[in-house]
Amino acid sequence: MAVLIYTQNYDGKFKKSTFELVTYGAAAAKELGTDVIAVTTGKLDDSILKELGKYGASKVISVTNNELNDFSEQAYASVIEQVAKNNGADLIVFGNNPYGRAVAPRLAVKLNAGLAAGVIALPSSTAPFTIKKRAYSGKAFADIVIKSDVKIVTLNQNSYKIAENPVDISTEEFTAEIPTGAYAVKPIEVIKTGGKLSVTDAEILVSGGRGLKGPENWDMLEEMAEIIGAGTSCSRPVSDLDWRPHEEHVGQTGKVVAPNLYIAIGISGAIQHLAGVNGSKVMVVVNTDPDAPFFEAADYGIIGDAFEVVPKLNEAFKKFKAENALYVSIITN
Amino acid sequence: MKALICIGHVPDTTSKIKFTDNDTKFDTTDIKYIIGPYEELALTRLLDIKDAGIEMHITAVNVGTVETEPTIRKALAMGADDAVRINADASDNLFIAKQIAEVYKNGDYDVIVTGKESIDYNGGQLEGMIAEFLNLPSVSGASKFEVEGDKVHLEQEIEGGDLKLEASFPFVVSAGKGFLPESEPRIPNMRGIMTARKKPLQIIEPIGQDAVTEISKFYLPEPKPACKMVDPDNVDELVRLLHEEAKVI
Image 1 (cartoon, helix red, strand yellow):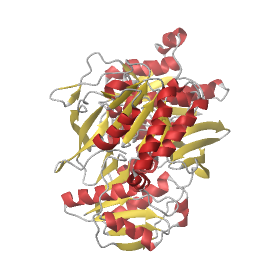
Image 2: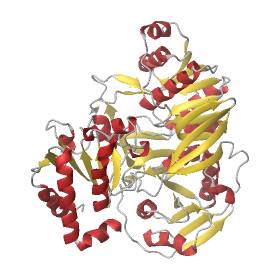
Image 3: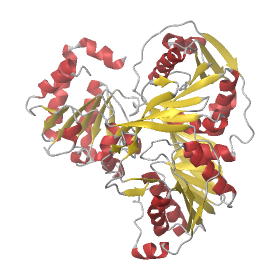
Image 4: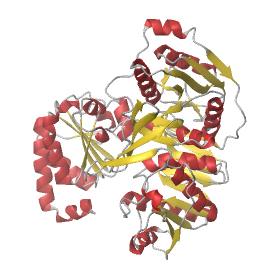
């Protein structure tokens, strides 16, 4: 028995979302009375691998095949299947991110495992194995029962609180068999989106809608994001109009986000938009229209013109930042 | 080129979600059903490619009971050539994927297209499961789909960037945002609706596959306390609330 966690690394480093997964896996393993094994790809420094021990992983396996530098759904699913079988994994945890979404379903077929996608909590019961997931695009939740011997879950980002729980960790290298034809879909190149904070990683998002009237008016939002250490995002019309890049689109058909703080400026709050952001801990809305539906979903609201409110708010954030030295360390942590 | 496209039958995106039977069933009262938004994008993209002169036969497939037929007919009205309905209640993903894989085996398809995820169960599992059942290559959440001869150029959003890919037939792909560039999903016209009535819709019975998941209960989100309004001339107050009350900055 073991809980196996797929821990993606990015250029040889782990991100906070990985530590969230390991913290979650450790808590699940405690419920199940078993150990946590992490699996990652590539040759990583031992010191990096051992970071996972801080969050409760007792073993980390790095799969060292060079082929895995390129992503392939088939190859990754096969590699994780081999590790899962070698280690008797009965619960496998992925992040509900592009890799998890691509690999977990293939693995489910290989292991005849039930897959719960987008879970937001630990299992509420281990027999029958019952776990809560997001459903109806954030408008509801569902308890899903997994009846197979092996269970797979993908955890929604920012749904479990990272906590340190240091244990002794061993590291192990593994050379997997890569199935023939696994790279039949040929990777050509990766176009990096740059060093900007991605909308799913950001703990604070400053988001703009059509109320901002044009792409030239985003400077004040970028400024706010810089002051408070936030990422920037936008509503669907804004990305459809090409005012902002598509990777910033949050909502039902864009990215689903769950930051600590979501600041919506000039976004009316259509149900499709709310579906993508209502997992946020705190929502602030600035809108000229007092009847904008977003005010019903938000925690704090300002009725006012973004062009007047945002510059004032930026000054207030600057002042606050200057007065609170601690604040800087919180947001850059 | 022969394409098999999986069509989801889901509640309209503006639906108010409610449950019945002690919160174990979705309340279908007053619910309007639509083709899943991602499948609608994907079907439109295939039709655009066909209109651009690439020979293509499009089969729409759905696992569902008779209630899903109007949704399947809508796909035919948009322009799919024919359709298959596997007569079963769609709930477990391995079960659904197995049925679609079976349809593929009995046809001569070059590509299977699904949406990135359904907007009701939010599973996003079919593409990978179908591909694995058939041992086919797969691309999840494609944000581009360009056919050039016997190759397809794709893009897949990964963390920190976009991965450019090149696939050869046959393969499985799920359509994310961007799959349909710069155009709105097609709305069936009157002629489409009329011809859809005469297009073949084959109904087949499912093959065996044990369901390994089931939903035992639904929940609605807790109602939020009323929004606290802050005077636009006193934004310092908002900063104070975010710091002292919400503790998010």
